[in-house]
Image (cartoon, rainbow over all chains, first blue to last red; front, side, top):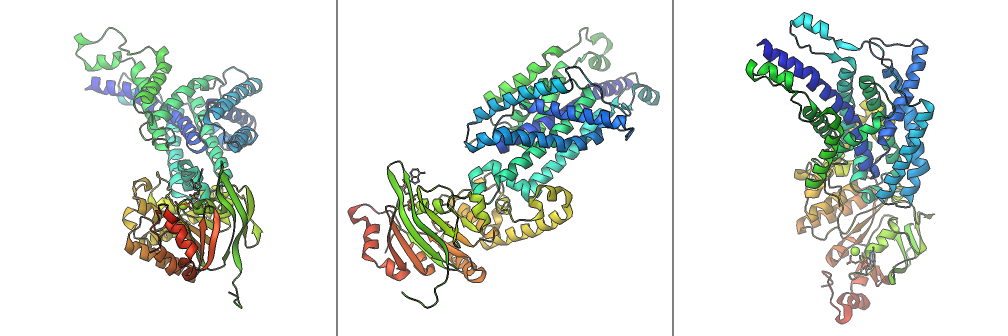
Length: 337
Length: 269
Ligand SMILES: Nc1ncnc2c1ncn2[C@@H]1O[C@H](COP(=O)(O)OP(=O)(O)OP(=O)(O)O)[C@@H](O)[C@H]1O
Ligand SMILES: [Mg+2]
């Protein structure tokens, strides 16, 4: 019995909770990708850099707040900084749109052109981040690190395998649920949200039905700013902020959005789960888990890992390729007209 | 035709022209629509009726000519601006938001309410939900009127062609339009429903003062509804006047019967 409980605790602590937290962080990114694709009709290569930039603003504000001794301990100060960073990031995104994308929309440029422009913006953002905050990692997490530490858990339960829950993990999951819920409410239950969906569905008809395209564009960027700030900060709190770690998130984010069907918010959430858990399940070392459950003689020698951790990013790539080959519209996507 | 009290002109076009390559689809059309009227636009297939609607509704830019709404030049304004000015249209081949439900297809129409502004949606949720309820009721009433309540929650892509037409008509009823251009709203719709649409048009016209301009090939429909009829052929004005006069006009009958050419319209009986 204890063995089963130990196995359960082990897998919850190292697989289920980190998986849910990672899926939540990914979902923020994938929702941004899918909104931009659905409404503005292009694949935004600068999305990861946008998240990095958003996190950078948030770190600078956090440091400033910490200097002014503002604190909401035991919660991390970055949570307040987030609210202050959102308007700034939204301004940056809308500014970029007005300076660049707007022109290409006006001349009805092809999606490929937008993609290249976004790649250019990615490079520029990269440079800006390097200049402002430098390439080194930053630690901005404060407040209580753990909700449930290994020691506490062992004392309470007497199990060998501890179930650990980090504040950043719980925050990621809870905030993702709240933000996701609000986003779906906005898209489905308000007129602005419906206009956005209508615009994404049939742009010409939406214009003829009175939808103001400029309004749609700026609302989209505000939503993307909110998602980027939240996703970036939560990822940074959980894994530590290194400016260019977000570049490695670009592939999983796109994989998640594509699995779910580009343009579908529900799809982006489901896709994030698929990608996050594929990564973890395939690179998880099953040795201990099996050792607890199997009879002593059968306990495996090796780590029982299907893929080495270094191949983590290959998994997103593989998922992307498989989906594009088998069902390019993804799980919830619609056929393009 | 001199009447003592002519109602004011609501919409007028002056020498409107548009060519597609070498083809003059609309060629110098001047037309005026009186406030509060129901006028008809007829003409054989390919006469340029739909193109004229597209020009008026801002969907195409004219090569030359002007469109005026209540004396204001509205040529080449963006469609959503024209919509805001109360100028609406439906399409001959119905268009819909396929991924939205039928109800949402109506509820997407902007109405200048709190829920339509981004900040209103988040910061005044109480008011937004009250308005949502009112909006939903209005949309449901319209669906009931159009007899498509049973498909309210289906994605609009699953509707039949006739049902999609009704959804388009419903969308115009959601806004508070001054003038509505209906492009063959009756084509493909069954008789009984056609009858209630024609009733609806008359009621909206009488009770709410909407002005209508409709393209139809069904001459009975036209003659029952319209005060004033314009006939187009090959992009140009052929004749205009009172419905009864136009429908018995030699030239008009010739254009429809096509003088040896095949005529496709349900036509003049
Ligand atoms: N987008 C377009 N590109 C090229 N040619 C067009 C286009 N739209 C219409 N035309 C041409 O313009 C002419 C007028 O077409 P239009 O659709 O306005 O006719 P219509 O009077 O509405 O006919 P119908 O009764 O069949 O609907 C036709 O010869 C058509 O082929
Ligand atoms: Mg036509």
